[in-house]
Length: 120
Image (cartoon, rainbow, N blue to C red; front, side, top):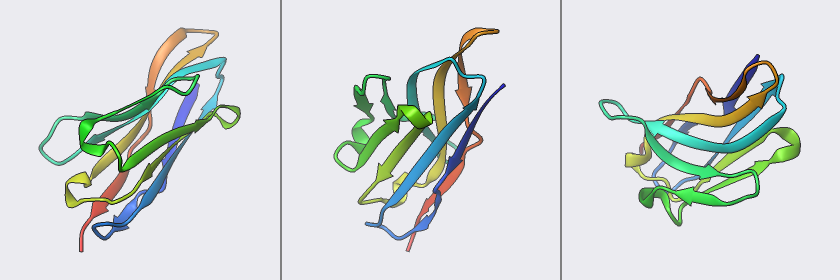
């Protein structure tokens, strides 16, 4: 009933930039927090950044000053602008959203993930 579809991943050189997008669709009544997580090989999934429906943000210390999260509530879309990328940013990036649908209420939904590789 709800889908999160990510786009924008790829291969980039150290110091480069990428912009990830994630669009939520389906029988959505309301979206609260949206965010991005990442999982590198052999590591646990970790929070990258989150944004509330009124625009408050929170970032992992490792990405502060380099990444910016934003959202377009009219489009049910969240973005992650990633600048000054480092090899340690290489991971699968997952979109996450806390969504209310009339039939089941509030629940957490995940995208399928998009690969970001930072390498020369």
